Image 1: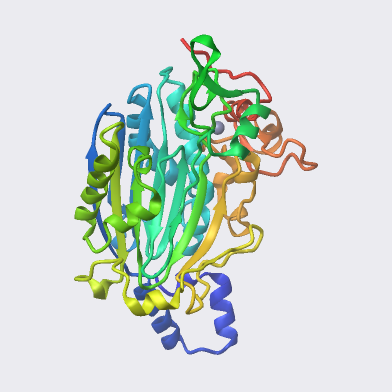
Image 2 (image 1 turned 30 degrees about the vertical axis):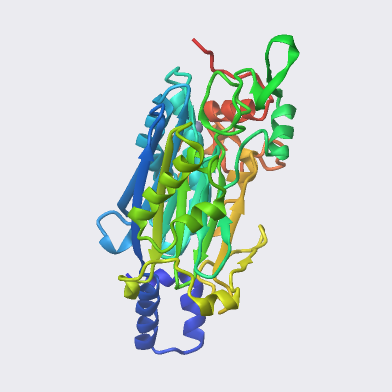
Length: 435
Ligand SMILES: [Zn+2]
């Protein structure tokens, strides 16, 4: 219901301003209208090993049964050492993310809860897959589009870029590659992994930096139980809000990015509708490098409803001159108000970004608006398993803040998830045994 969706604080301040109910309703309806977008997409894939998978869902609902609460999901899973992990993640990740969002939230609260739910969903999916005893692994780049708000969570190197009319091409993911990411190399080494190149006869080192044991080039992934638990499934998460001119996302596996730099990939398909753009990008990658790897690409255009016939981003001259793209950084601690008005000069507003591999940092900051009203806080923050309440809670489950002076304060983890957290941080040997 539109009026109530404004949330307690907003409604109260409006009442103080003595705004008549009729104009309040008008305002809410207008805001609902301004969040309306059209999403057009296209996918293209050229397999080589058959380990790339993708997911497209344009019919998800925040409120089950309410078609006006529709959101879209686009994801790419680039598997390695087999395709079992990629298939499992494709089939389960979305459900696990949705299952980690408390029920009964309004739209803004829901968007605010997403980054934390994505972390929980990724870790839960990884834990479940590892319990199956299979050794394959996968990247996961998972994009949720709700109105103008885009939330991207990723592990691995399946990059997602944003191309906005008149602006620069920007990266919404971080490449979790040991070769290119010094911070990740440090973390893996500190957690007990060894980072080095493959050495062949005569001690000659070849190829990119890898993590040993296992020899994986990625520092984060889902699955990979034979590699060591410091290869974590904790995603980098970034949330941005597009301006009303919209933008284009290009999500692809490294088969594409190893052939085309982000700028070139964006440029080579500008002016084409999404379906042709995806095909063009894959074609361009094959032309420049040949078919060396599975190459999968999803192009998603988020456009205003009135520009149905228009093809984004075609760089109109007047916008180009304005050079109006600027990311407005939000401080991590600021109480982000997603509905904040956008300055005219800003095309993309950055709402959230966090990439830490420490679970306590990622799950700890429960938005205060959620902390009292939602009983799921007495469940495990990762697997959502119900935990016993009251005095038992300190025995069966510990607060995720191990050094906290108030161990009875959430979020809590069940015994299994706590073990997993400690293994990922290198604080205990992995409980999982490779068969
Ligand atoms: Zn758990």
